[in-house]
Length: 98
Image 1 (cartoon, rainbow, N blue to C red):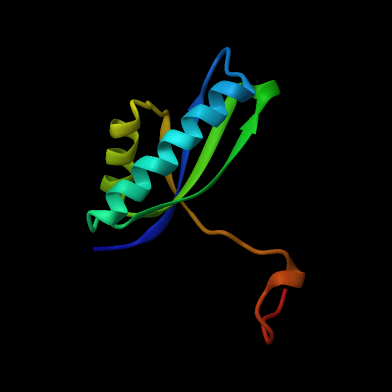
Image 2: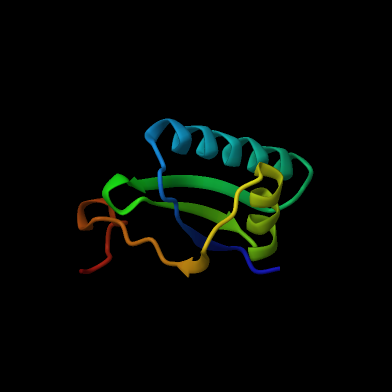
């Protein structure tokens, strides 16, 4: 089983901050429930771009686990992509270079 980081993108015409917060809360709850049942998935955070009417959420886990979390939350999405998080230079472990 390969645990990687994922970004889930959704275009969401008409999205408001209130709707986004409700969905993000639901996704986080579902991920915690799945993890408690031994499913390898963790919600890492989200970015809402109101001007673009888009929401991107980040997860650790398997593609299947991320899909199941969305199904349980009643949430659709447009794309599921593998990502690599790159911390700011100041936050990188000692001994790494730019």
